[in-house]
Every structure is written in C-alpha cells, then in structure tokens.
Amino acid sequence: MLTTLLFLMVLPIAAAFQFSSPNQSLTTDQEEGTPLSQKEENENNEEYEDRLSDLPNSVILCILSFLNTKDGVRTCVLSRRWKDIWKHIPTLVLDSSRFDTVRQFEIFMSKILTLRDNTIALHSLDFDHIGKMEHQLLQKILDYVYSHKTKLQRLRIFVHNDNGLIMQCVSSCKNLTSLRLSIYPRMSFCVKTILFPKSLNLPALETLDLSNFTFYGGENGYAGPFSGFAKLKSLIIHGCTVMDTQIITISSETLVNFAMLYSSPKIAKIELSTPSLCTFTFYGIPHPKICRSNLSSVKEVKIYARMDTSLEKLPMVLFNWLQELLAVKSLKVSSITLQILSLVPDLLEVKLPSLCNLKLVEIKMQPLSFALSCILKDAMLMKAAAKSPEEAADLRKTFGAGLEPPSIPDGIVDFLLQNSSTAKVNIS
Image 1 (cartoon, rainbow, N blue to C red):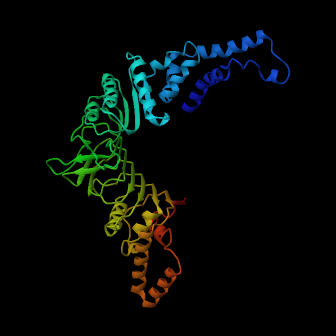
Image 2: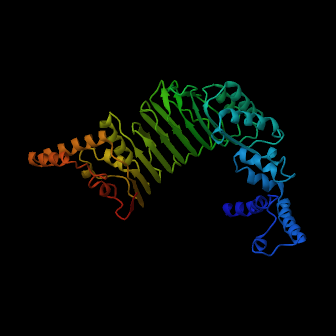
Image 3: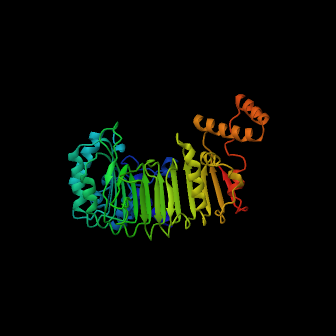
C-alpha cells in the first residue's frame, strides 16, 4: 500500500519533469502532424502545473525525505514554489560516493548545513564519508547533530575518523530509535577498532548496528554494552571484538533480531537472555559458544560459516548451536557450513533433540577452498581407513585423479531433517 501511495504522489512530479523543458511544447498529436492550438497547449500545461501546485507541502516533503539530499536539492529548479522546499526536508542523506571528488562533497555538505532552515526539526541523518576526513568537517556535522538532538530519531554515520567526539555526540541524542555506526581509523592500513562505551543510555533505541567496535569487560569479567537499551529490537555487530574479557552478555526482553557478522575470535562466548529472540544470523568463523537462554525461542536461523586454522573446534561449535534450535522453522546455511559440520565425529549417528519444527531448509552453494578441501579429504580418508586399508587406498586414488569432496556432504541433509521429514529443501 505504501508503494502505491508513493507512486500516486510521484506522478505529478514526473509530469512536471516531463513538461518542464521549454522546447517540449508539442504533444503526440502534433508529432503525428496535427498541431495543437496555443490555447490548448496552455490549458494542458496549466493542468500539469495545477496538479503539482495542489500537492500540500507535507506530501512533497514526505516524498523528498526518501531522496538523497543531493537529488532533493535539485528539485529547486521545478518552479518558484519548489525553490526553497528542500530547506524544510526533515531528513539529510549526505553521501560522498555521489560526488566526483571528496572536496566537492565537503563543499556541498557545508552549504547544506548553512542554508537548511535550522528551525525545522531534523528527524534523520545519514552521513557517509569515504576516505580520510578532517576533524573540522566531522566537528561541523556533529555540531549540527547536537543542535537537533531532541528531535533526531535515526542516525547513521560511516567515517574514517577515530575521533572520540562521535560517541559523545551520540550519547546526547536520547530520542534515537535507530543508530548505525561504522567508524574506522583515519589511516587505511591501521586495523585499530573503536572503543564502545561501557554503558550508553539510549532509552528509545530500537535498532542498533555497530561496525568495528571494541567492547570493554566490566568488573564481573563480562562485556555488557547493551544494557542501556530498554526497547532494543534489532542488534547487528559487525567486525567487533572485546577487551579485558572473552564474554559478551546480551540481556533484553524486547530483542527480536540478532546478527553477528565477521567478529573477532577473541569473543569466545555469548550469553543470551533474550526470550523474544526470533531471528539469529551469523556470518564468519563460528568461534563463540552461545549459552544461558540459548536459541530456544528462535524461529529463523541463517549461518554462513567460514573456516580458519583452528578448524578442529569449529565443527563442535556449530553442532552445539544446532542442538539449541528447539523452535526453529527456517534454517538457511551455506554448503561450507555443512562441510564444516560434517567433520563432527560420527555426526550421522547422532539423534538430535532439536530441529523438530523445521518447515524450510535453504542451502546456498559456495566454492570449496583449497584448505578446506584438504581437511575434508583427510577426514574422509580416515573414515575409509577405519573400515579397510583397501577402501582408503581406492579413495586416495580417486582424489589423486582430481575428484573433490561433495559440495553437500553425503547424508547431512537427512541428518538435519531427522525430526522434520516433511520440511522443504531449497538449494541455490
């Protein structure tokens, strides 16, 4: 319904663009050889002009709030009425990738912050700056955020600048409902992460997305950086690590979605107390154990695992996760995830206490790396040797002839479906 509504609202604007060219004064009839009179032409132009003029400002501002700020400013050429409308848009989307040079972007941003009507509340700011950024420019955008902190609801910042002022500014925006921070060092060769406050009180926050942060351990030996978000529903941590601890605790009555993407192996354990959790997503090397309230409430799981040199621990981590999935209905995994899981000793003989409510299993095929191929071959040879030396010798010859281990290990799909035999399986 929203898409239809936006389409209907955009139609008059599209018409305005269509008839805005001074050279376009002929209709299809004229192109076919029947020119319109000047009066008919004027009536047609007035019709489109009236349709555009009839739109209330609130509707126009709603449409413009979906645009990048650069595109929003361009609408000032439509008519006199539109000349200053962009100054009242309650959102700012400032993206340096839309400019030929960083300098052009910085000049544009400075003018926007100067010319925008500062009496209009700012509800959303999306700031994306690629490459090294000067402190003065960052300070300017942070000052603007601070001046609108009471009404600001959504904030996204992607910068290469490890200035601690960013977190100070964020902590002042108590009405934020959505926060996305990707903060990297100014020097591209530096692998330093940014320290996240031990406690950050944002009582209205519902969505949190963090990239490249370090979480402190507290006096109890745990990192619990999310305790100040009483209404949190969605949490994504990407490329994060810990300091002075190996354990992250997440305690939330409201959390529904949790995603952990390519995080540090220093995070050895995640303690979940999240009775409302419905979706769990994991990308990366499956180092962390998940304990306490576990994943028993989760309905949808996505696991796209990778491998590293300490592979001997990873299969059991995956296996332990699966054992906690008591209520899951949708399981999405990569073929590499299944290959790593297949390395659990005697896996196919295990009777799972979980995966009893599965409706869908989706397997995403991924190319087999050389390292994982070697590990899988060694595991298969060991199993064959346990049966007979002849079988191992035959398998070794087969591998020597160029045969690779199967992309989806034999029997593993049936293993997953042992308690949900009617579940649908999709392979992509």
